[in-house]
Length: 326
Ligand code: SF4
Image: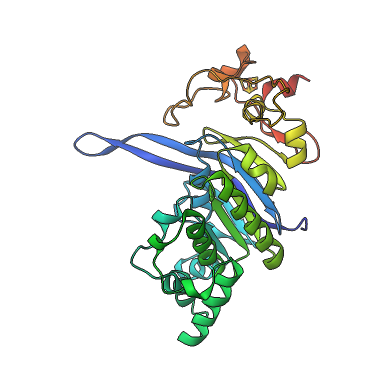
């Protein structure tokens, strides 16, 4: 892993219009991603964590331009992705692939595994002929632990874990440098989750991959991430080196997520922080710090002024008024 940046996100916003009335006028916006900035170095894994609906998947899709950004900058390998035309974007897409949460829904049920994995090779013209393409498919399937005997089978003939391996193979087929893994193990049994995570780690070493690994649970990203970013209601609230984040979480929301991780030792008494209420709506997010209606430490200023997101040393970023007072 190097300190060289592969991806840099600056002030990224993704708002969805809410339409109403006969004329379908825009009456409000869902602020799914609201001014987030972070980077990923070459060869590293950044875990992006938050409750469902916090905007993490929207952020992943916006980075890949599967959704158009409302505002901000996305720099990949020195190119601003938001300024690329269609042809340039297609070239760049080869370098950035996605693995989806639900491998079954994301695989075309009418296509064989050979065609699912071969499709991106065809789209990007990476094989001179069918023979070369099939050789490449065989090689990739072998890499993800699926033998050639599976090539002519259809997605419904596979288990969840195997289907996710097909999803991984499809992403790998074009030899990308960045993979955005959007909750890749959330739909799998716990016993299978570790196998897929181990596979992703092995592939990272073998193919010098960089990952943005999205999950709703800190325990899932703990094993695989180098750094972790925590998102709440469209905003990043904390980003740090994994060990620092687990040993010294600075933001009350991160502390509550960490306290919810089950501990194997039955004699260990954890001080679980139970959050009050549900995640508020991103259409009309709370004023000041968006976490204030649920934060056990909220002060008067928290509902009035948005805390600054800043570096509290060695790349440990957080946004909380408590930290400004220390
Ligand atoms: Fe809690 Fe205030 Fe910090 Fe927000 S800014 S996390 S409400 S203490």
